[in-house]
Image (cartoon, one colour):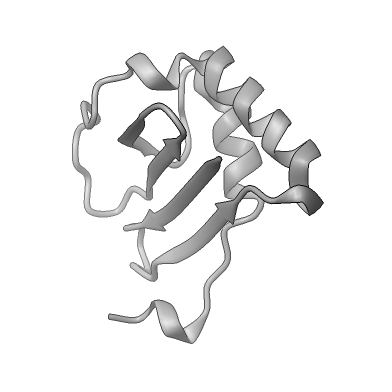
Length: 103
């Protein structure tokens, strides 16, 4: 079981964008790739939120839950270190805006 919720927020025009992924039989290849990216990035050992806050900078909040653990990490949406870049790019490419994201 793998569940990921990603939210990109902040920036010059602060409109939140979301993406949710839940593992099932149809998306097993994507789940395997996400697991690989999570492990390669060191996601499970990252601090929760150690990025400086800048109102005009987008931030990526990743909430990940698998069968053994759960974790939330907040990162700059761009400028991640090399280890996080592949995971951030994979997730960011799937994040979209929709009217239901307005709170």
